[in-house]
Image (tube, rainbow, N blue to C red; front, side, top):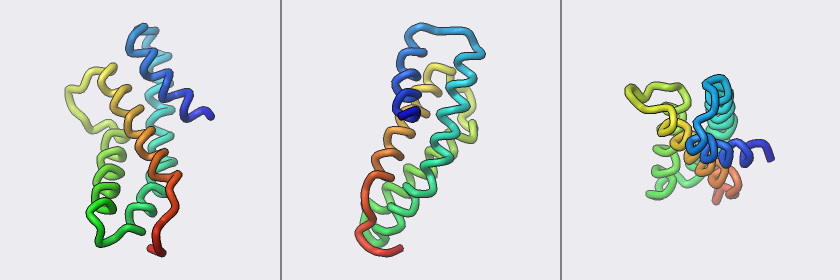
Length: 103
């Protein structure tokens, strides 16, 4: 799966420090993965309304969207890649779960 490949690649990129165009392309893909996964992850969180975990999921989705928008001032590129990769993994986990009830 391309999403998983990109998450793993982010960790490797941080260690190897490749050319900036490679880093930029990976960052763009990770941001796109977050954008793609945010809506179904948010739907899962809304399906848990009234439960503390549902609010946690929604807060995480909002933070992921903020990170994908690139609004973290002063963050280093290696930190940003790892942050984006972690959000992608988390959103993948949420999207793989079935809602407990209708939203």
